[in-house]
Image (cartoon, rainbow, N blue to C red; front, side, top):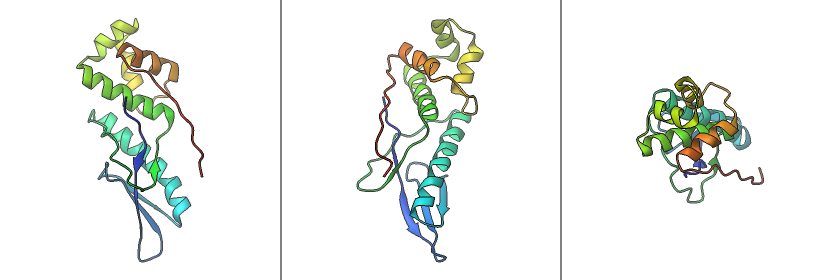
Length: 143
């Protein structure tokens, strides 16, 4: 299962603001007054970039190597939705087939993949399990 810690490139613009660029998401960029604010904004930006890919049913790219760059991670539910999206694509399984295996209506699978729906992590975990994936959660110091 992929991890979702995406490297970012930080640059300072002519006004002294810190720009954040995502090598893996060319459509995503944000900024902040300083490094700390820029990285906080980057989390929201990454969430939106992943949400856009999920809504358009496009692949969510795996993170490129960090190579000393800072990384940004989406929230746990968004990461689980991206993992489910990738697992479904890899298994070439339809929403309907997954719904049958879960014993639910196909609409529930659509909601699990909907980036705007507040899915329960346990349901995402169950769906990933059917696809042979295990959800793992890790914590790291925010510093």
